[in-house]
Image (cartoon, rainbow, N blue to C red; front, side, top):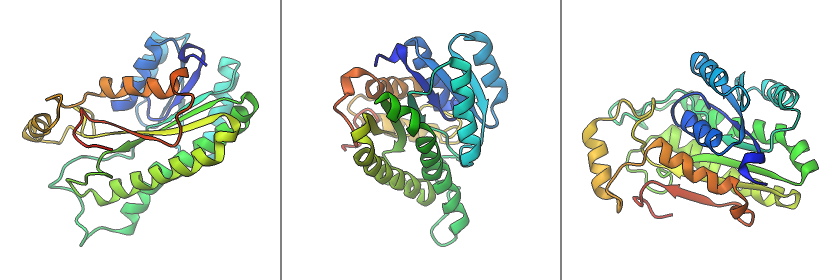
Amino acid sequence: MEIRDQIVLVTGGARGLGLAITHALIREGARVVVNYFSSEASAQQLMQKYADQVFIYKADITDAEQVKTMFTQAKTHFGHAITSVINNALLSFQFNGDARPKVETLSWNTMQQQLDSAVKAALNTTQAALDDMKAAYFGRIVNIGTNLVQNPVVPYHDYTAAKAALLAFTRTTSHDLGQYGINVNMLSGGLLRKTDASSATPDQVFDLIAASTPLQEVTTPEQFADAILMFLSPWSRAVTGQNLIVDGGLVKG
């Protein structure tokens, strides 16, 4: 299925990386379900500007019932079920190495919050999508990860552990769902210049990353968002269970 024929859910699609993903999909002609929780003003602007392509819905994606209702409402709005899911939403988080919780003081509650934000949320959206994806014998699920799993240069224990669990879930679900024509992949980035989450990162850190990459630059949200299109396109119909690292070549997968 071409991207322009798809209805794509982007969780956290009204701010940061999610907003860049939403814009990339709009540009390609897709219809987009923009999930948000606290970014209502930005979501409303998207709906007003792209009324034919965008449906916005406020939902806590760690709540399975809210997620199911969102899928039902989106299907009613567009007259067709969601075909593709981008699990992007991130619990409020700051990439600030100085402020990160050290292992000596790390609480399980902090770990649990990140696991809920990453894995529980992906489980909820995947389960809500399954009936319609199975019926269509088509589905694309893209989970957003991090290159810190491969290269934990800054030990953000809670965030990185949750994304590692999401990578495992990506691979196990791809095995389970391939028989239904559903492809499940992960796209993993490094520090992006800039998003809300990376706004606290000092400029010298960005400069160091740029100098360490073959492309001599820090990946932008727009560059990262464009790479997602590959996993949604017909060109990737034989690709599933994979983790593509998009960070300018800094980390080798």
